[in-house]
Structure formats: C-alpha cells, structure tokens
Image 1 (cartoon, rainbow, N blue to C red):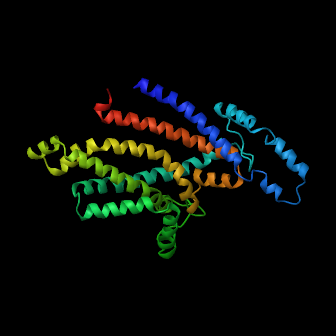
Image 2 (image 1 turned 90 degrees about the vertical axis):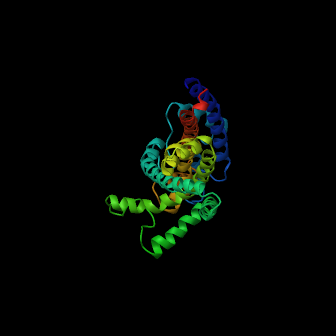
Image 3 (image 1 turned 30 degrees about the horizontal axis):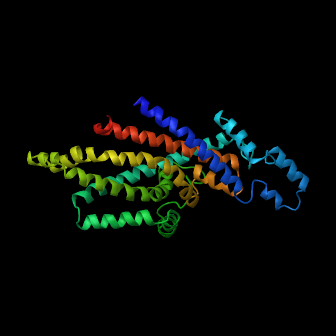
Length: 315
C-alpha cells in the first residue's frame, strides 16, 4: 500500500508541473488582461498603465513570470488578487465553505437517487422500469447544466414560488430551514448528471454480480431476496461505483462553476467566474491548481478504496 501511494505521488508531481505550465500559458495567451479595464478608460494615462504593468510584474517575459509564480506557489504564497489586492488564499478560504456545502449536498442527493435506481434497474433488467431509468439517465447526462438550472428557476422558484431562485440565504440572514431551501435547487442541478451516470454504473455492476454462482447458492439456501441484494450483491458491486464517486467528487467542485453562476451561489465557482472576467491570474491559477491537486488526490483515494473492497486487487 505504501509503495502504491509513493509511486502515485511520484507520478503526480510531473503531472502537476505540466498542468501548471499549460494553464499559465493559456491564461496569458487569452485576449485582454488585468489592465484591460484601465485601457478602456480615457482618463488613465499611458504612463500610469506602464507603472501598473511594472508593479504587477506583467512587463517581464512569460517564463520569468511563471518561474516567479511557481517559486512562490510551492512555498505556500499564492499571491494577491489583481482585482482587490487581497491575498488569494484568503479569498478562496472565504468561498470554500459554500462550495463544500453545495458539493456535499449534491453528492448525497446523487447517491440517494442513483443507488435505488441502479439496483431496481438491474433486478428488473429489460422491463419497463429499466428502460425508463435508461431514458432518464440519458437525459440527465445530456441536459446542459445551465439550461436545467434556468428551467428549475423559472418553474419551481419563479412560477410556483416554492423555493428561492438564487443566493445562499435570505438578504438579512435566516435559520436552517432558509439555508436548506436555498440549497435544494442548485444541489439537484449539480447532482443530476452524476446520479444519471452512477445509476448506470451500479446497474451494470449489479447485473454482473447477480449472475454469479454464490448469488444462486444464497437464493437456493432460502436467504431472503432483500438480504441477498443488499448484503451480498450490493456489497460486491459497490467497488466500481465507489471509485467513480470518489473521482467525481473533485469534478463536482469544478462543475460547480456553472451551477454557482446560475444560482448566484457564493462559492469557489462564482469566484472563478469573477476572476476569469477580470483576468485575475493569481486567483485563476490558484483555483485550477487546487482543483488539479484534488483530482489527483482523489484518484489515488479511489484506487486505495477499490483495493480495500476487492481482495483480488491487493496482490
């Protein structure tokens, strides 16, 4: 186990370095920049623009800027936001709880929908429920997140008035019920794609397990069907699903960019959107690097969890 962890960490370091180079180059190659807002202001003199460029280090060559950023980043110095001058780490820590709240709720919702649907579809393979679940899963994977979010806002929030349409809480604060009501719609939107995919993963895994001899033997011994499904079949079929869930947990954070923008949710996704519109390079780099680290770390966690559940992989 320790050898596996060390090997994967060793593989992750060059991957992170390559990601940082590509992201840094692509961000700086995009049109515009953090000084674009000043360039459009006729009251700002060219010498003022040049002074700002030198102060921000934008007058240096791209390799020099990258080397300075990388040296500071590995030491824990994520720099300062170009839009308000505050430390990048502080801005991200302020937004992190909201994103974790939304991501955690969406993962729970996705699992609550995917597990029963996957089990029922496997048990009723080829029947109407299996076909209906397949159509719904295809729709869930295919629907654009922003479109689905807008539809829920127009119908449930605005049309029916059942839930708030945006924000994390009421304007002047609210209790637990208010926080939950604001969380429902964005959590459903963010969970829809994952629930659709996970239900099909579990269905395929359950079908394979239900065809095994030990399931037939358990049924021949008179063990109740519900116990066979939950204790024997689901336990053996959960390994691949768990690996996918752990991997997708990191993608939930990056996928929250669209959802948080639609629902004005004050998390890391909304911060990324704001930084992207202002070409706030330090914030963008910090967000993308943290996301990349999360993906690599959870990839390792998924492998270890799968090994722990499946003894055949331990050798």
